[in-house]
Amino acid sequence: MKKVLNLLAVLVFTCAFASLANAQATRTWVSGVGDDANPCSRTAPCKTFAGAISKTASCGEIDALDPGGFGAVTITKPITIDGTGTLAGILASLTTGITVNLPVTASFDVVTIRGLSINGSCNGIRGMNIVSADEVNVEDCVIFRFVNEGILVNASTNTSLNVRNSTIRDNAGDGIGEGTSSGFAKASLINSSFIGNGQGVHAKINGRMEALNCNFSNNTNNGGLADGGTGVLRISTSAIFNNGTNGVNAPAGGVLEINNNDIHNNGGSGALASGGGVVQTFGNNRILANGTDGCATCTPVGPPA
Image 1: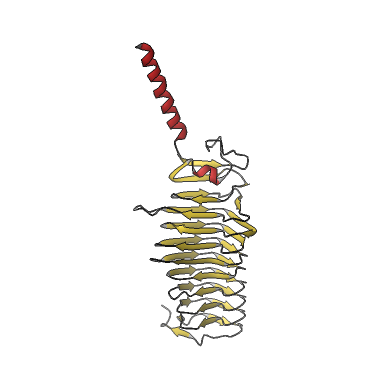
Image 2: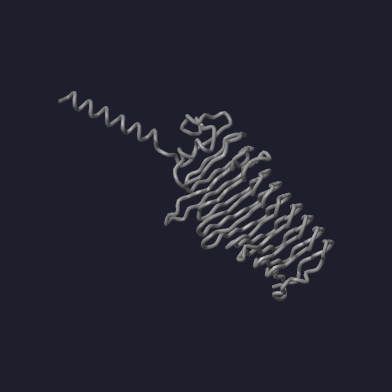
Protein backbone atom coordinates (compact mmCIF):
# COMPACT_ATOMS: atom_id res chain seq x y z
CA MET A 1 0.00 0.00 0.00
CA LYS A 2 2.85 2.36 0.86
CA LYS A 3 4.46 1.72 -2.54
CA VAL A 4 1.18 2.52 -4.26
CA LEU A 5 0.87 5.79 -2.36
CA ASN A 6 4.45 6.72 -3.21
CA LEU A 7 3.82 5.99 -6.88
CA LEU A 8 0.69 8.15 -6.84
CA ALA A 9 2.64 10.98 -5.22
CA VAL A 10 5.31 10.77 -7.91
CA LEU A 11 2.66 10.83 -10.65
CA VAL A 12 0.92 13.86 -9.11
CA PHE A 13 4.22 15.73 -8.80
CA THR A 14 5.19 14.85 -12.39
CA CYS A 15 1.84 16.04 -13.78
CA ALA A 16 2.01 19.26 -11.75
CA PHE A 17 5.53 19.94 -12.98
CA ALA A 18 4.55 19.29 -16.59
CA SER A 19 1.57 21.63 -16.23
CA LEU A 20 3.78 24.39 -14.88
CA ALA A 21 6.34 23.83 -17.62
CA ASN A 22 3.67 24.16 -20.32
CA ALA A 23 1.94 27.18 -18.76
CA GLN A 24 1.87 30.35 -20.84
CA ALA A 25 3.47 33.48 -19.38
CA THR A 26 1.85 36.90 -19.37
CA ARG A 27 5.16 38.45 -20.48
CA THR A 28 7.77 36.72 -22.64
CA TRP A 29 11.08 37.86 -24.11
CA VAL A 30 13.04 37.50 -27.34
CA SER A 31 16.72 38.16 -27.95
CA GLY A 32 19.03 38.17 -30.95
CA VAL A 33 21.00 35.44 -29.17
CA GLY A 34 17.96 33.56 -27.82
CA ASP A 35 16.70 30.07 -28.59
CA ASP A 36 13.11 29.02 -29.31
CA ALA A 37 13.68 25.92 -27.19
CA ASN A 38 13.88 28.25 -24.17
CA PRO A 39 10.84 29.16 -22.04
CA CYS A 40 11.09 32.78 -23.30
CA SER A 41 11.76 34.12 -19.82
CA ARG A 42 13.85 37.18 -19.06
CA THR A 43 16.93 35.05 -18.40
CA ALA A 44 16.22 32.41 -21.08
CA PRO A 45 14.68 34.34 -24.01
CA CYS A 46 13.42 32.94 -27.29
CA LYS A 47 14.87 33.69 -30.73
CA THR A 48 11.75 34.63 -32.74
CA PHE A 49 8.31 36.15 -32.31
CA ALA A 50 6.79 32.97 -33.73
CA GLY A 51 8.61 30.93 -31.10
CA ALA A 52 7.51 33.22 -28.29
CA ILE A 53 3.86 33.62 -29.22
CA SER A 54 2.93 30.03 -28.39
CA LYS A 55 4.41 30.53 -24.90
CA THR A 56 2.62 33.84 -24.30
CA ALA A 57 -0.83 34.02 -22.73
CA SER A 58 -3.77 35.71 -24.43
CA CYS A 59 -3.62 39.48 -23.73
CA GLY A 60 0.03 39.09 -22.79
CA GLU A 61 3.15 40.79 -24.17
CA ILE A 62 6.29 39.83 -26.08
CA ASP A 63 9.22 42.22 -25.50
CA ALA A 64 12.58 42.45 -27.26
CA LEU A 65 15.61 42.46 -24.99
CA ASP A 66 18.18 43.63 -27.56
CA PRO A 67 18.65 44.30 -31.29
CA GLY A 68 17.70 41.48 -33.62
CA GLY A 69 15.64 40.21 -36.52
CA PHE A 70 12.84 38.22 -34.95
CA GLY A 71 11.09 36.78 -37.97
CA ALA A 72 7.62 36.90 -39.48
CA VAL A 73 4.71 35.97 -37.24
CA THR A 74 1.02 35.05 -37.45
CA ILE A 75 -1.04 36.40 -34.55
CA THR A 76 -4.18 34.47 -33.59
CA LYS A 77 -4.87 35.93 -30.13
CA PRO A 78 -4.92 39.38 -28.52
CA ILE A 79 -1.32 40.29 -27.75
CA THR A 80 1.27 43.09 -27.69
CA ILE A 81 4.64 42.85 -29.45
CA ASP A 82 7.01 45.60 -28.29
CA GLY A 83 10.51 46.34 -29.58
CA THR A 84 10.80 49.87 -28.20
CA GLY A 85 14.39 51.07 -27.87
CA THR A 86 16.08 47.88 -29.08
CA LEU A 87 16.30 48.11 -32.90
CA ALA A 88 13.95 45.14 -33.10
CA GLY A 89 12.90 44.13 -36.58
CA ILE A 90 11.29 41.67 -38.95
CA LEU A 91 12.98 40.89 -42.27
CA ALA A 92 10.13 39.49 -44.36
CA SER A 93 11.70 38.35 -47.64
CA LEU A 94 9.13 36.53 -49.84
CA THR A 95 6.53 36.53 -47.08
CA THR A 96 4.22 38.78 -45.03
CA GLY A 97 5.78 40.37 -41.97
CA ILE A 98 2.79 40.14 -39.61
CA THR A 99 -0.53 38.41 -40.24
CA VAL A 100 -3.35 39.19 -37.79
CA ASN A 101 -6.13 36.62 -37.89
CA LEU A 102 -7.99 36.40 -34.60
CA PRO A 103 -11.05 34.14 -34.35
CA VAL A 104 -14.34 36.03 -34.12
CA THR A 105 -15.43 35.95 -30.47
CA ALA A 106 -17.70 37.88 -28.15
CA SER A 107 -14.68 39.49 -26.44
CA PHE A 108 -12.95 42.69 -27.56
CA ASP A 109 -9.69 41.46 -29.10
CA VAL A 110 -6.83 43.95 -29.50
CA VAL A 111 -3.40 43.51 -31.08
CA THR A 112 -0.66 46.12 -30.56
CA ILE A 113 2.57 46.30 -32.56
CA ARG A 114 5.04 48.84 -31.18
CA GLY A 115 8.59 49.89 -31.98
CA LEU A 116 9.36 47.54 -34.90
CA SER A 117 11.13 47.90 -38.25
CA ILE A 118 9.37 45.64 -40.78
CA ASN A 119 11.50 45.30 -43.94
CA GLY A 120 10.20 43.57 -47.08
CA SER A 121 13.68 43.36 -48.63
CA CYS A 122 12.13 44.46 -51.98
CA ASN A 123 10.38 41.08 -52.43
CA GLY A 124 8.23 40.62 -49.33
CA ILE A 125 4.49 40.13 -49.91
CA ARG A 126 3.20 42.85 -47.56
CA GLY A 127 4.13 44.36 -44.22
CA MET A 128 0.93 43.53 -42.35
CA ASN A 129 -2.18 41.62 -43.40
CA ILE A 130 -5.12 42.19 -41.06
CA VAL A 131 -7.72 39.50 -41.72
CA SER A 132 -9.68 39.54 -38.47
CA ALA A 133 -9.40 41.56 -35.23
CA ASP A 134 -11.50 44.04 -33.33
CA GLU A 135 -8.64 46.53 -33.12
CA VAL A 136 -5.03 46.70 -34.27
CA ASN A 137 -2.65 49.41 -33.01
CA VAL A 138 0.57 50.21 -34.89
CA GLU A 139 2.77 52.59 -32.90
CA ASP A 140 6.27 53.96 -33.57
CA CYS A 141 6.93 51.54 -36.44
CA VAL A 142 8.47 51.72 -39.91
CA ILE A 143 7.16 49.41 -42.67
CA PHE A 144 8.94 49.45 -46.03
CA ARG A 145 9.95 47.80 -49.32
CA PHE A 146 7.12 45.33 -49.92
CA VAL A 147 5.78 44.43 -53.36
CA ASN A 148 2.18 44.97 -52.23
CA GLU A 149 0.73 47.02 -49.36
CA GLY A 150 2.54 48.23 -46.29
CA ILE A 151 -0.64 47.41 -44.36
CA LEU A 152 -3.68 45.66 -45.84
CA VAL A 153 -6.97 45.51 -43.95
CA ASN A 154 -8.98 42.86 -45.79
CA ALA A 155 -11.57 41.85 -43.21
CA SER A 156 -15.02 40.32 -43.37
CA THR A 157 -16.32 42.01 -40.18
CA ASN A 158 -15.92 45.32 -38.35
CA THR A 159 -12.32 46.14 -37.54
CA SER A 160 -10.32 49.21 -36.48
CA LEU A 161 -6.73 50.16 -37.31
CA ASN A 162 -4.91 52.88 -35.38
CA VAL A 163 -1.55 54.08 -36.71
CA ARG A 164 0.44 56.57 -34.62
CA ASN A 165 3.94 58.05 -35.07
CA SER A 166 4.82 55.60 -37.84
CA THR A 167 6.32 55.68 -41.35
CA ILE A 168 5.06 53.48 -44.18
CA ARG A 169 7.24 54.01 -47.23
CA ASP A 170 8.56 52.62 -50.51
CA ASN A 171 5.97 49.89 -50.97
CA ALA A 172 4.82 49.09 -54.51
CA GLY A 173 1.17 48.89 -53.42
CA ASP A 174 -0.83 51.11 -51.08
CA GLY A 175 0.87 52.42 -47.98
CA ILE A 176 -2.37 51.42 -46.28
CA GLY A 177 -5.28 49.82 -48.12
CA GLU A 178 -8.39 49.00 -46.14
CA GLY A 179 -11.82 47.58 -46.78
CA THR A 180 -14.27 44.97 -45.55
CA SER A 181 -17.00 42.87 -47.10
CA SER A 182 -19.27 43.42 -44.09
CA GLY A 183 -19.55 46.21 -41.52
CA PHE A 184 -16.83 48.86 -41.60
CA ALA A 185 -13.04 48.93 -41.67
CA LYS A 186 -12.10 52.03 -39.69
CA ALA A 187 -8.65 53.61 -39.55
CA SER A 188 -7.21 56.44 -37.46
CA LEU A 189 -3.88 57.82 -38.73
CA ILE A 190 -2.08 60.36 -36.56
CA ASN A 191 1.39 61.93 -36.90
CA SER A 192 2.45 59.42 -39.54
CA SER A 193 4.07 59.46 -43.01
CA PHE A 194 3.07 57.62 -46.18
CA ILE A 195 5.90 58.21 -48.64
CA GLY A 196 7.02 56.62 -51.89
CA ASN A 197 4.24 54.01 -52.10
CA GLY A 198 1.99 53.15 -55.04
CA GLN A 199 -0.83 55.08 -53.34
CA GLY A 200 -0.28 56.87 -50.05
CA VAL A 201 -3.49 55.54 -48.47
CA HIS A 202 -6.52 53.90 -50.05
CA ALA A 203 -10.04 53.70 -48.57
CA LYS A 204 -11.84 50.88 -50.39
CA ILE A 205 -15.26 49.29 -49.98
CA ASN A 206 -16.71 50.08 -46.52
CA GLY A 207 -13.44 51.76 -45.54
CA ARG A 208 -13.60 54.73 -43.18
CA MET A 209 -10.21 56.39 -42.84
CA GLU A 210 -9.32 59.53 -40.86
CA ALA A 211 -5.88 61.20 -41.02
CA LEU A 212 -4.56 64.05 -38.86
CA ASN A 213 -1.11 65.71 -39.00
CA CYS A 214 0.21 63.26 -41.61
CA ASN A 215 2.51 63.40 -44.64
CA PHE A 216 1.42 61.95 -48.01
CA SER A 217 4.33 62.58 -50.38
CA ASN A 218 6.22 61.19 -53.37
CA ASN A 219 3.78 58.36 -53.97
CA THR A 220 3.67 57.01 -57.53
CA ASN A 221 -0.05 57.68 -57.95
CA ASN A 222 -2.32 59.52 -55.50
CA GLY A 223 -1.48 60.77 -52.05
CA GLY A 224 -4.96 59.71 -50.91
CA LEU A 225 -7.57 57.67 -52.79
CA ALA A 226 -11.18 56.84 -51.85
CA ASP A 227 -13.16 54.52 -54.12
CA GLY A 228 -14.88 51.13 -54.11
CA GLY A 229 -18.30 52.78 -54.11
CA THR A 230 -18.28 53.29 -50.34
CA GLY A 231 -14.73 54.30 -49.39
CA VAL A 232 -14.47 57.43 -47.23
CA LEU A 233 -11.22 59.28 -46.49
CA ARG A 234 -10.91 62.44 -44.37
CA ILE A 235 -7.58 64.28 -44.20
CA SER A 236 -6.96 67.24 -41.89
CA THR A 237 -3.93 69.47 -41.23
CA SER A 238 -1.62 67.38 -43.39
CA ALA A 239 1.03 67.76 -46.11
CA ILE A 240 0.20 66.28 -49.54
CA PHE A 241 3.20 66.91 -51.81
CA ASN A 242 4.92 65.64 -54.96
CA ASN A 243 2.64 62.71 -55.77
CA GLY A 244 2.79 61.38 -59.32
CA THR A 245 -0.84 61.87 -60.25
CA ASN A 246 -3.19 63.66 -57.84
CA GLY A 247 -2.83 64.94 -54.33
CA VAL A 248 -6.21 63.40 -53.43
CA ASN A 249 -8.66 61.60 -55.69
CA ALA A 250 -12.26 60.38 -55.26
CA PRO A 251 -13.42 58.37 -58.27
CA ALA A 252 -16.21 55.79 -58.61
CA GLY A 253 -18.41 56.73 -55.69
CA GLY A 254 -15.69 57.44 -53.15
CA VAL A 255 -15.93 60.33 -50.69
CA LEU A 256 -12.99 62.51 -49.63
CA GLU A 257 -13.08 65.35 -47.12
CA ILE A 258 -10.11 67.72 -46.94
CA ASN A 259 -9.63 70.33 -44.26
CA ASN A 260 -6.73 72.75 -43.68
CA ASN A 261 -4.16 70.86 -45.77
CA ASP A 262 -1.17 71.96 -47.88
CA ILE A 263 -1.52 70.31 -51.29
CA HIS A 264 1.43 71.25 -53.53
CA ASN A 265 3.48 70.06 -56.51
CA ASN A 266 1.39 67.03 -57.46
CA GLY A 267 1.63 65.91 -61.08
CA GLY A 268 -2.12 65.96 -61.79
CA SER A 269 -4.82 67.78 -59.84
CA GLY A 270 -4.30 68.88 -56.30
CA ALA A 271 -7.79 67.56 -55.53
CA LEU A 272 -9.95 65.64 -58.00
CA ALA A 273 -13.48 64.20 -57.93
CA SER A 274 -14.47 62.12 -60.97
CA GLY A 275 -16.80 59.32 -62.06
CA GLY A 276 -19.35 60.00 -59.35
CA GLY A 277 -16.87 60.57 -56.55
CA VAL A 278 -17.09 63.49 -54.12
CA VAL A 279 -14.40 65.72 -52.64
CA GLN A 280 -15.76 67.86 -49.82
CA THR A 281 -13.83 70.88 -48.59
CA PHE A 282 -14.23 73.56 -45.98
CA GLY A 283 -12.42 75.92 -48.35
CA ASN A 284 -9.37 76.32 -46.12
CA ASN A 285 -6.91 74.13 -48.05
CA ARG A 286 -3.86 75.61 -49.77
CA ILE A 287 -3.80 73.99 -53.25
CA LEU A 288 -0.84 75.42 -55.21
CA ALA A 289 1.72 74.52 -57.91
CA ASN A 290 0.00 71.31 -59.01
CA GLY A 291 -0.61 70.19 -62.57
CA THR A 292 -4.13 71.57 -62.07
CA ASP A 293 -4.74 73.93 -59.16
CA GLY A 294 -7.91 74.92 -57.43
CA CYS A 295 -10.69 72.46 -56.77
CA ALA A 296 -13.31 72.92 -59.48
CA THR A 297 -14.81 69.49 -58.81
CA CYS A 298 -14.97 69.91 -55.03
CA THR A 299 -18.17 70.25 -53.01
CA PRO A 300 -18.07 73.07 -50.43
CA VAL A 301 -19.49 71.92 -47.10
CA GLY A 302 -19.51 75.23 -45.28
CA PRO A 303 -17.05 77.57 -43.63
CA PRO A 304 -14.36 76.16 -41.37
CA ALA A 305 -15.58 75.67 -37.82
